[in-house]
Image (tube, rainbow, N blue to C red):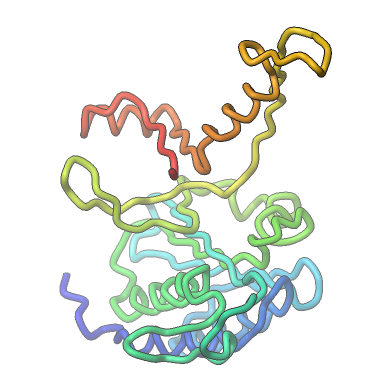
Length: 258
């Protein structure tokens, strides 16, 4: 289906600039949600729910039903909070400045750019008459950067499990193009960021501090080990490993950021 011109890039860009003006640094996410709601309602989209974990910290759920309700339910998750602006900006980070073909502002990439696209995905589908089966749920969470258990997706899982209980799958933040087998492919990241803790013990021979133990110095081992720890490690689930194996012949994935 040719969708050219049904949603203009300028519409998405102008909306992104508007929401970049809201300094939603761990608060004011409701203001972002209200901007989204304003645009949706202009298009006649009213199937949304604003769920606040506390005043100002609003999660926005948008439900888009297809022409045929019988089908799968997919969720796409983004977030409306941003990290502090920091130093070194050449423009005001909360003005949504467009310059030389780029839009600058805190959160333009992470994650208000995705919020703008999600908003206009709902609008695109509405303008097309929702030509799909099943249901699409767009969740714009109020917290991701701080990983606060009292807000965002964690709050919703505890207090509104119904939002997630009947979906068939979810696509989280991020994505982008990667090169695999000499071809550029779209990367889809599924899930939320988390943390793992490891306890590592280094052992060596005991001895007096005045004597050099170059062959068995645990501190030396520890320094060498820490220097070799990768900055980023990606572990892929068994089903995804099987897909990579079938498509590309890759039996395992261990990606490091050197």
